[in-house]
Length: 75
Image: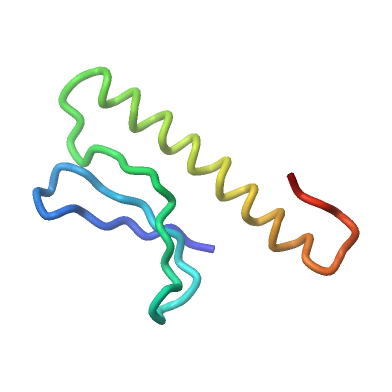
């Protein structure tokens, strides 16, 4: 599973998407954005926390995909 980065029209934020394929509907949004050029310390902290959260979501998604067909129930 890959992560796609798409810049908004203003160019100040980058929205992150999952990449499951190239067809329609195969790039759902993660709901996370980062600042492309953080200006303040708060924006830098936001970027760091957002990327950490993205790693957690990515790990959870991988576990869910690997548990298909097993007795393991994800929560």
